[in-house]
Image (cartoon, rainbow, N blue to C red):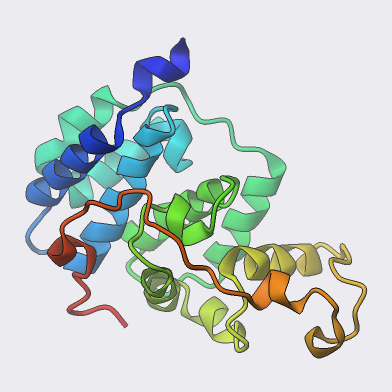
Length: 214
């Protein structure tokens, strides 16, 4: 019942995305506006409310709204939903990303929490961030967590690379193979990440607004 209260259809989520983009501070970078609006929209498709679905507490959600989507701050607050309960796994992912934070802290700090939360969803990470393609996720990581992105030299799947890094930092062995080249399951980590966007009908112009993205 609670999830149904907050869930939006894909069409309604796309309309919400459009409202966020229209409400954005014009001084903000279009690519940052796009990725944040996409994450917030797909969080509502999952039916958890914005706080739980995007991995932010209500105060952080309000700060992000005022900084990036000031004209939509009231709607974002109204769709906040239940308080987010961050578990140890999610906190570990967020903390690793924060170590490598390289973008504007107003964006990058909440984005670390948002990526950590969406890592727990079942699809490819770019899909569960509401993005249009894996290339947008690479731009996000390079822009906001540059040192972390630079470590992914083999272009491993991002979710795999994130958890491999987290487990390594905590001393947890993730793979018995001495090197990736010697692993029998290399495709699991390095295979294609194609598929459809969860917000597939986003306008192409909105989905590729990377004029200043790296």
